[in-house]
Amino acid sequence: MQIKQILTFGSYLQEKYGKRVYKVPISISGFTCPNIDGTVARGGCTFCENDSFSPSLDKVQPLKGFHLNLDSKENPHLERQLKQLEEQFSTLSKRLRRDYGVEKFLVYFQSFTNTYAPFETLKALYEYALSFDDVIGLSIGTRSDSVTDETLSYLGKLSKEKEIWIEFGIQSVYDVTLERINRGHDSVNMRTWIGKAKAHGLNVCGHLIFGLPGETKEMMLYTAREAYGWGIDSVKYHPLYVVKRTALANEYARGEFKPISEEAYIDVLTEAILMKPENISVQRITAGIDDDSLISPQWCRNKNRQIRHINAALKQVGLKY
Ligand code: SF4
Image (cartoon, protein in one colour):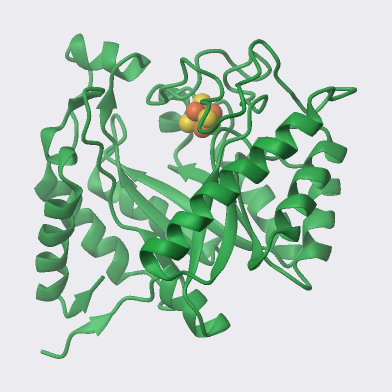
């Protein structure tokens, strides 16, 4: 059987720009999430480890007790956030150039909800990121209930010149599941705002989680099919695992949640990839965490092994990642 390469995000970018393009993950102090700060809910999604609102990844000290939201009237810490952005980008991009010969970058606003701040703050951060050497664009991680028409319209204009991605956590299209994981918004909200992002000409990446509480394989595949139908351009697949200091860890301890097995994950993943339109690139096929915070399942500890197992299963159906 001839083995076909799945379109990866890396190859999509390489094809378009003729060079290796890597995402540089950034975490800005002061950003949070409406599902944590009490605007929508408290505590966040049940699987989210959000003890420390904004982890410090660099020399700039985190801003203790300062958190932005969509209604913040002023941001006295903007200069500090810009500095933090510059330092993180500089450190990580140097490393990527040195270790992997990467020549072009996408600045990836990754932690928490990166459109959940006053418009002027977002504009300043995005434009500063785009001014760095060899940055071809942005990827902005957010929630569908935390984008505004103003931000989408502005990003849509930027996307005429730059590679602009917006990443939405979809996880599941079942409202019963979204409630169970304390997501704080429903599936209509996701469909609506993904549609608006597409209408503004933005590239959309959807994050899907397989193994959510109460979900069957059919539900997971239905979610994937729906998300593809919403017009996403790229996808990240993720198994649900339990980490310490989360509501899910308590559910797990009480015997109310059983993590997905590796076999079941690979089975649903393979089918989800088989039904995926070929033009939707894949950014992630699994997730691993090899530290003390992982409670279960243990197969999520070794990402290389997972990828080997996934590729063996994909080979059976004529695909490779
Ligand atoms: S939306 Fe993201 S940051 Fe917010 S609580 Fe859920 S997982 Fe955590």
